Image: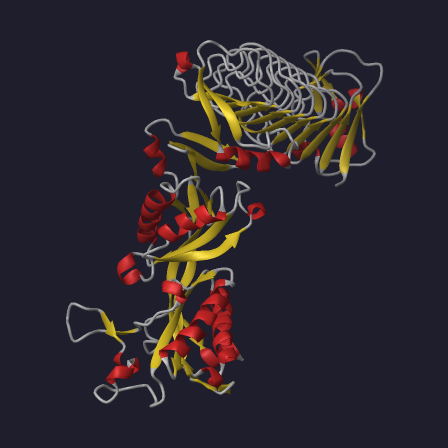
Length: 298
Length: 268
């Protein structure tokens, strides 16, 4: 399959079931809501060492937030409910509670819930106040700029993490420009995030390593500087490979996000230096979700 | 929605206890079956059909037409559906209510919403004393649900209230929020003396500052309270423009003789 001069490999991305939640952060201004979100969702690129993967899903106008202030919706993904709860509490406690003027609310409901302000309320040292509004419980925690308002809990969602595609280009600059366009397109898709810096990854990995302690190591088949010494997946004109990794609330969201990202790359075309689109998988044995590139683009 | 219509017959006298006459008990019954239901007239059991014209239509909702405030316990222990009272209600309207919507187009008597646990009670006119309060001898008053009063309310609004939300567009009488345990009262028109007396927790939000508060309240200054934005949005769909549009309020904390964790909020 060749689109706009770009070869789309007959392969698939392999993704995994994850646990996720959505939270809404509001503040006196969008700037401060984003300060809180960027802190809370920072260092959340990969579950391998960050505990969770997280990012801003979308900016919200005051009409779309519970308290009528500007805000952002963010998604957090983890491999287990326990880990997600731990990461959520730490990140809300250290990054949102601490940020001036913010409040935090559940962005989803589910049969299962995760503590949001439920335990953080004890920071109020006995002065915290509970409020039930429209059947949902909130905690008012006194802080030095007034009160931090936190909904007691948020919902737990069963979701998909690790959808991906690889962009192979004639130069790093051209790969980066195409991937930036892809990340921007994915950012407009509700229910999906690209958790890596700027939405782009350069350090794709393979399973295993020559070092026994490492579960994963550099994807040498896609490293252009190892051509000639390692088995390569790159043709001679490819100088750089970048990857887009996507986490999504549902399988459908993942397909929409992958399609949006790949369309953005394909629009750049061979004229923009893009040679191939491919995807990362583990032979189909590890992940429950498969996303064939050609099927998604059809 | 189709409704069963009960119209109070002219010429009868005495107070009528309407306990048990609810949308959930009349739905699915024929007019004859509904007329055979029992109510109490001055304590004596009588068939409902002797006091009310039933129908001719029947439906899921219930509409009760009354010219005088003689019907007590309207919507008592109601769990769902819609009960509309065209005219004034007597005492104890919505007592022990757990769900559904009770609408009173006229005034409500005393002790409306006492022991209420859920649902929505709307009063288009005024409400009497002890709205949402504990009955004499009861430990707690209203413990959930929402009450919206378009007019004024009497004294002891929310006395010993445990949970829930009361919205009042008009004024409240004396001892508004007295002995409240928790919950939220919003009174747009202000209130009389002794507001929040013996308040333990809970919020009393006044559209107008009272002339004086009990001496056991301390001024905690002015603050921008985010949760008021939340409350305002919720209340806007029930009784618009009662919760102040701005979250900037002066906070008085008290009653310090009873723990001091309650608050009276007044506009700055």
